[in-house]
Length: 181
Image 1 (tube, rainbow, N blue to C red):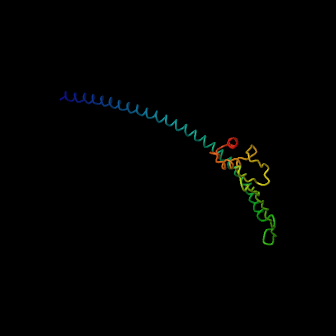
Image 2: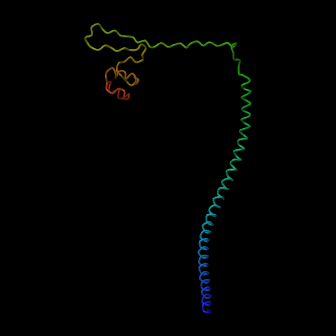
Image 3: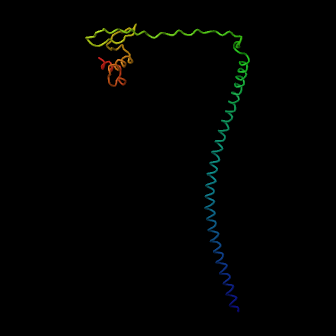
């Protein structure tokens, strides 16, 4: 029986040794994974710290702007109060007496200008030679019937319409003068 007990003891020692090796491997693998994870978390922590620092700087700048805006608002508040008081004073004291007792100034209607008189030139009873002369406004500075550069574009277009010139509405003054001569 002694042999069996020695074998059990050696087997127990071998098993303990193998268990320690396996445990060491597991501890080593876990520590590697923890190291990798801690490196990742360290990197993420540094990124987040940088973000926090940037945001804190931004908050500081914005707080300074808020203070500037507050001081400007106070200035405007004072001006607002002054203007409000001036408005109330102006509303209390009207500029002039207005009411039913105030005489109303009557305004005469503006004279209406008469339209220019157009004189009709009677056509001869017998017209052997041809065309009848067109209507000429009385008091017209240019009574000529041939278009020239002194005529307005409106007058040129009217004559072109009478003479049935094609495309007269799209033509310039120079083109109308050429077409009508």
